[in-house]
Structure formats: structure tokens, C-alpha cells
Image (cartoon, rainbow, N blue to C red; front, side):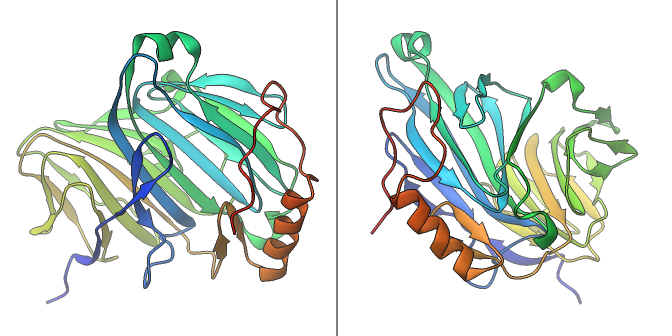
Length: 287
């Protein structure tokens, strides 16, 4: 009998300074799910008054990042001049292309009061023909993300198409990213995509009888059919078409090793553009 879940990835804890994240991708034996090559789950984190997020300016190439919040706020600045708060429910797509620099901070008002932060950050590979496009940033407010209720299941399609909905968020290849809130006992058909994985944030679900652990990435068999909630649940589904091998080093992703080597030299030499309003600090190239 074919197993509905082909791989369960227990994330590794990674310290990013002010807090730890759970990193589910990449791992040995599972470098990607569809175009998605990186998956971090952070929080819920409780910041006491005076504390906050301080991710200094750092570079990316040949990829696109997606930041999505369940709770809290992150202030995004980048080398294109964008400066805006990322808030729950919105999709923030940053296309690195040939190179971008950004920072992620907590604004003074939230730092003074203390707050709670919870969300996901994902990276997706770009098709080889798009790896060196001009960088861009696309902000899609929460009220522009298509949603549907399917017999007790609230679904939001953040990227791609599923359940008769198509997100307005830009994609570069077959890409799927959605979230669902399910009442206990509700069921949902598994959406269609070349590759799929489910990340459970709350509650309990099974796929064709196979349990999906909480805070873990369950890679699904293409033949999987039904998601069932054993408790009130919330999860994300990612997937799409695998774009082939990608090399990852620090914040750089590329189909070409030599491109990553060039990016290392460029960052060390200060050749990436600065982040206006956040020029005083940066993350040095790791050893």
C-alpha cells in the first residue's frame, strides 16, 4: 500500500540572534518541494518591552523570498527603497534576481511596548531564465488574497491556484502556497501540484489516515487524496514544479556554483547596493 506521507521532516532549531527558528528546508534527502528551497517557521515569540527583531542588512541573489505573518509585525527595508511594515495576512514577495539587500527590524513603538511574533519565511528558486532579472518587491494586502470556505474549512490561496481560486501574487513557475483553518472533523481534498508538502502549525490532521505531526513538514505522495482534521487545525501547503538542483550558501541560491562565488566576493567588497535608512550596519560574509 502506498504511503500518503513519503517524508516527515522535523525542523532543526537555528539561532538567528533574538530568537530561534524551526528550519524544515533544505535537509539532506529533501532539498526542495516544488520550487521551494527554504522553509522557516518562527514563533510564537514573546518580545518583552525593549526587545525586538534586528536582522541587519544582508544580500540575496537568484531567488524570491516570501514572508507571511500569523501575528505581529516586521519592518522591511530594501535596496530598492521600499520601507514598509509586514503585517498578518499579507503576502510580501521579494524577488532578488541579480541582487538585492534588505533588513528586517522592529519599529520603536512595538519595541517599547513588547509584542508577539509568529510567522513563516520561505524561499523559492527562480527558473534559470529568470535568475538574473531585476530585483523587485511586491506587497499584496491581506484583503486581496482570495479565500473560500469549503464545508468548515477556511482556505486562503496565497500563491498559485487551488479550489477554483487564483492568487494575484506573481509567480515564475508552477507554484502553490496556501493556508487552511479546519474545524475538528472537517475534511479537505489535497490540491493538485507536481510536488506538495503540508506544515501543521496548530491542532491535528491526517492525510489518508497518516498523521501529520505538528511543527513538521510532511511531504505528500502525489496520489494523496484527503486531509482530515482530528482537532481544530491550521496548516500551510506548499508545492509546485521542481526546478532542478539549486546550490545554497548562506543567503545565496543559484543554479550555478560560480555565481554564488561571485556573490560572496561582491558582498565582501561592498558592491551590493545599500539599504537607504539602514546603512550603518550590515551582516558580514560568514567565514
